[in-house]
Length: 439
Ligand code: NAD
Image (cartoon, rainbow, N blue to C red):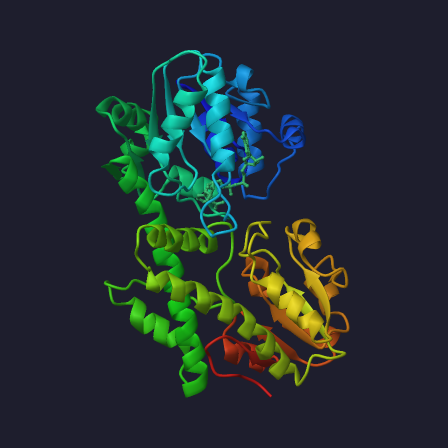
């Protein structure tokens, strides 16, 4: 059993804290957001993540997990601190490190014994040394510490499974002792066969950025292939399958859609491009990946417009607002520009998302009508647009929808359905990178 502190209880921090507690450690999770911590103490989760509430409650009840806003309280007897605060894009596209700096400063001011400071936040290469400088400068008296990079690769929507069964664990450290301690902390996962990559801090930081940049590249790539498929009469689903069976390519991340969003791919790709520029290099590929993504998001508006034969005065039932299924995260969601574009062109939007409506409200025009389910959204609408791949949207009652919509039209920006099946239910079906089906 180890005494661990996790700083920042957002998507990464809360999952990290709950999972380490579940592995038998004593974990105190700290956040500066008092409301968040108060709610967590009452068992109210700040985010939607499948299985998280149960995991948190089980470990709180077992006395292995608790929450605080006090660094002094959190740091008592702790030898390992994870930093899991946000690193959003700053004005220049660089990762904004103000939250990391403030966390590192508070840790330094409250540490009482030798410490391993583990950075889980996604940070620019060189941040490990910078955090060490921040801590050294803020310590009231010198206490030994070591900074480790252990980037997180979990995906929202399957975060617990991803934490417990990751493809790999990356540890970037300066000393063998720090490597040994990290291996010990992750021993149950190593015993389950998870491979470890041990490197210096800089390489670990680079692995995270390069991985996210590559995944974003794959998405922009297939999105452009899909666009070309539409123009030449090919079917991107068949093309992606034909490509993905090649082991050098692989089938994952070859699903086209309305562009990538979320808190990681856009900001991390932009950050690598910025880091490259600061080092006298233009990362041309990532510049292209980002501009393609912007174009793909915007392309969805004329696509819906063309399907409807104009947007002015039309009502669109929009299914899904979050940037992906199984999360309430609206950060950089492609639905934001899509909804704004639809309304600017005179459409009315009736939206339904199983979890993200509350997060969406401040980001979308006031005119959006929020509905309780897909069928309420479809009531009197001229088209059904599927924007997020929530599983419940894969099994819609098409006959029921046909009666609620003014015309049988589905625009599926996530390719959730087999076109022939939807057409057989009497719908006209427009999807991404595949030939249109139905009347
Ligand atoms: P988040 O915004 O959900 O949570 C960050 C939390 O940190 C907030 O609750 C905030 O109040 C708290 N915080 C800010 N400053 C603090 C301070 N000084 N002391 C204590 N708490 C503080 O962020 P997130 O999505 O969990 O991302 C965290 C990091 O992990 C980012 O660097 C991100 O790029 C990376 N990451 C995110 C994901 C993901 O899917 N969300 C996946 C892998 C890596």
